[in-house]
Amino acid sequence: MELIIDSINKTYGNGVQALSNVSLRIPTGMYGLLGPNGAGKSTLMRTIATLQEPDSGSITLGEIDVLKQKDKVRRMLGYLPQEFGVYPKTSAYDLLNYLALLKGIHHPRNRKEIVTAILRKVNLYDLRRKAVSSFSGGMRQRFGIAQCLLGDPRLIIVDEPTAGLDPGERNRFYNLLSEIGEQVIVILSTHIVQDVRELCNNMAIINNGRVLFAGTPDEGLYLIRDKVWEKQVDKSELEQCRQRYKVLSNKLVGGRPLIHVYSDTAPDPSFRSAENTLEDVFFAKINEVL
Image (cartoon, rainbow, N blue to C red; front, top):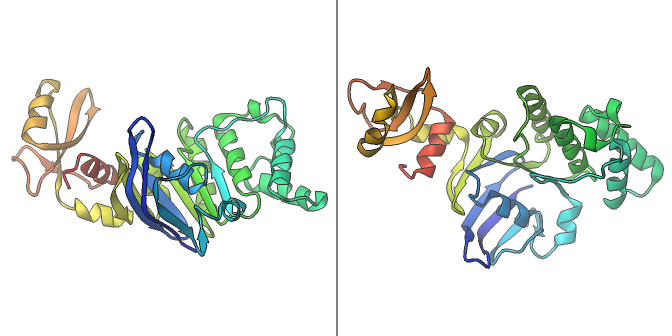
């Protein structure tokens, strides 16, 4: 199955163009949608999830017209928004059981088996009697994935799922998403480059509502191969460097800025070749130096 997004446009009432002629082909597997905050990622995710209408364009999931056959899409969809609420005193088991009922799993015995199996899958079965509101951030995200898996979805959308997670919870979440993504389409919307690099076989970079790149991470890295250079400078030199070079990024190392610069050759002998990273691809596209 393939999700095909064709020429989607969306402008809000305040004049902000959230999506501009967005076209993507998303196959089975993990697909990373990478962009800064406000890039249009959440607008696109809500549109795919049938929560809002675009101004123009089309979206198909296999043979289903997503914009016209919303009920069919919702039966095949698992959605984990950036923030989701829970009933404060409801246990993980009871809440997932209730959500399963809303998903159309009516037979009590069948529903119990499904809910139990999913809680085991996300490693929350031993905590099934605890209120979800008492869960840590990582546990809540795993519960969010649990509700995504109800109804055997063919398309799963997760929006900024690892924001605020500690490294251990993030790794557990990575492993869970990777396992799920072997059989279905999983769209991972994030501004965290590492998430895409570690999880996704295909990706797109979006900014200001426009698709700047679509392909594999390796194809993105090929665009900057042997064209990223680095050196440490004094803080007082940063502005001058920005004026002289195509500076992709800078970060403090030992209290001094380390700059990454895009250039076909070393800007001067003081620069050394930098290891190519997906973060450099991201900044090169966002800064429109490619």
